[in-house]
Image 1 (tube, one colour):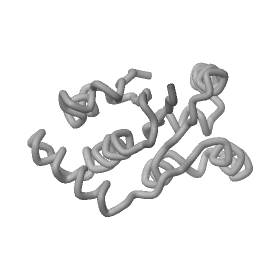
Image 2: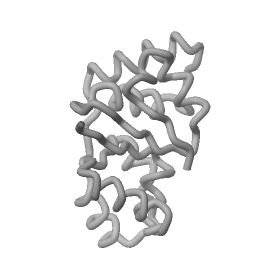
Image 3: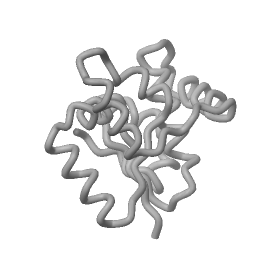
Image 4: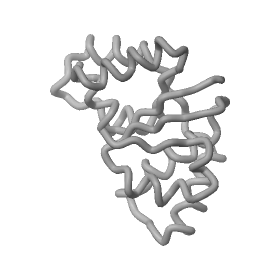
Length: 135
């Protein structure tokens, strides 16, 4: 069974900083042949000036950074509308959920600091393939 781990901005931020708990989770995922993903917008949100450029470069080379497609934007808009949410607070989360739903794997573990909003955006159907896990 193919699996993936998807990092939200807090997850990616912890990985960029070398936080032990997240590094251990990613190592465990890799031992189980799971690929680690994030989206391009998440990189912009998580990679700040306090992390050395060399560390950012190395960490990003270890994960798959998916682009935001037009289909992702449309799917995210549908999710936001269905959930009655809007604005920048939810936009990247909605794109991340759209990415989780399109990844070519049978199971996605979405590591997030905001499980409530991501679960709402995911809806009932997406929960079969995507597990939202709090950091």
